[in-house]
Image (cartoon, rainbow, N blue to C red; front, side, top):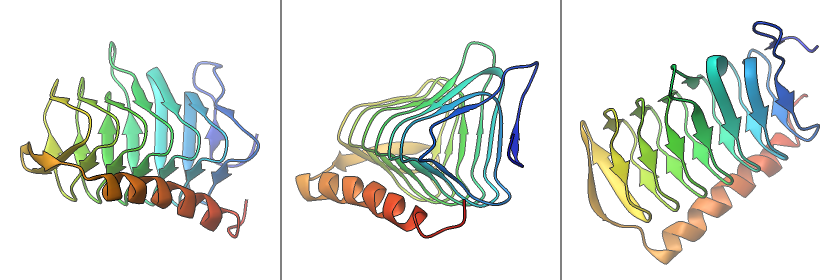
Length: 170
């Protein structure tokens, strides 16, 4: 097992061969990561008391932490960009979302597809965010719908991070 990929209670992470796990990242326990995803420097994905699932082409940027709780797995869809220093705890994020730097998303939160969560936003427990929402603030509030051009930007961001990952040491 490569450095930083660790079992928990004899459950090993399942990582597609195309995934970048950057130096210093830790992937622990019941974690599955889809094709062409990237886990960047010093991020931690700890699937100990529940599971973590990361979709294809999703990027978890530097110093982010993903954890779980009994009854609350952490599920992140396809083509999701999770910015630097984000905390995702026992939440569900649908496909094609952008989670801004420093956001904190707590247990039971459900974010619909094509959403943007602004940098520094705090989403408190069990909040439901409708698809195509722009959310900002602490606590986070929906401020408007996401435009079609922004939806395209979210997808391009995920593709850009995949392409960038091809040039980093595996």
